Length: 125
Image (tube, rainbow, N blue to C red; front, side):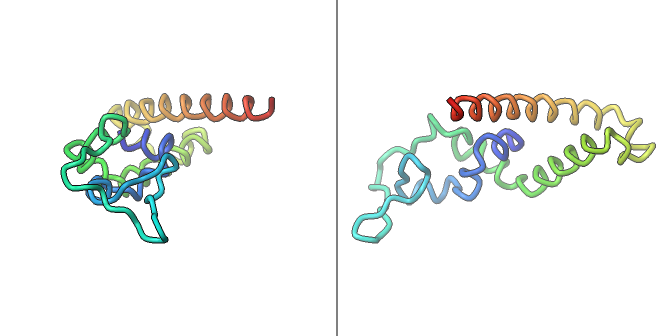
């Protein structure tokens, strides 16, 4: 979930579930303001977890905790991709678990790239 969050929804990274439980957000993921003051979520009102990629506080806690590690892993993936694997040590190149994880990340990144390309072609029309 962390790689998808960083690529597809980077605007949600700084917004924790705890902040979402306290403040109301607009459709552009900014805290709503009235008269220049942030608007608190009314007590007892539901949070929009049903439409959030983080899928609620239980799943988001692990994702938010792991974001620095996920970010480093994504950087590692791009370094390996840019060097066509030449940046891997012999030990890393022989690691089947690393190969599997990089393949999973590659599938997510390629889906994100297709989405970016489609968005760019739509905006050119």
